[in-house]
Length: 335
Image (cartoon, rainbow, N blue to C red; front, side, top):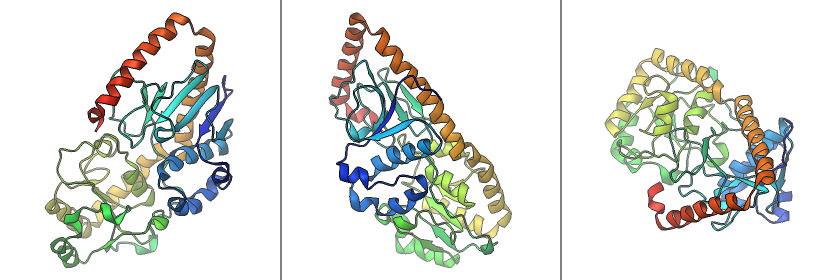
């Protein structure tokens, strides 16, 4: 790619923090396990830093900075840009909205990681799938047909209370199953996992429009069947019953677990489908998506700087001011 404008990834952190960040994607996972000790706002590192490292490794001319550049394409997390920031005609601001809910009123483009999510008020947005887990260790093939360990890859406090309750745990023991909750430093290791459960809430009335299919992608990549909740991203990209099993209450979850325990053929079919489907979300495919997006954005940034007129700037500024007021007063629209 020969960009028409420079491409910057922005992390507004002190120089000492920036200097301590990993400089290659191969070092990223080991560093990631300790990232939460550096800052509670770990998500901004995950989305900005990881993308920068993958693209730099792929040969794209990208830079990492900690101060807002005066020109070019600027890619950063929503948390890293003040709500009142107003890009100039020489700045093309790409905001990674990802799991945040309220967009930036003056961003030139928002990146969403749920393909179903849409933004109102004419806010420009584009879907970009998340990177699959760096350094992922797949299920150990030596486990063969064993089905005993049910993994939950997330913070223990976010486990649904009905799943950790004594009655449900007793039913799991009756099926010969145990719930495994790895610590964050081991979220890449699926070697001893026979099934993944990822359910934020039971029922069908919460869309989770700002949540991705990452847990599904990781299960596919690990060669492990998954039981997931009723979420828009999962249903759009994974097809319930084909790419994973869905559970909307504890009874359905127990039935799904028993089905997988008693039917090795069903498990193999889910795993086979996942291995085929996850190829679309491989590093190479995601790099290609980013390459196309940034090429387009750099051209737009250059064109905007050349063709900016006073009348056009006034019109865009007026519309942005309307968005700013509406988003500030009605953030609940996006929840």
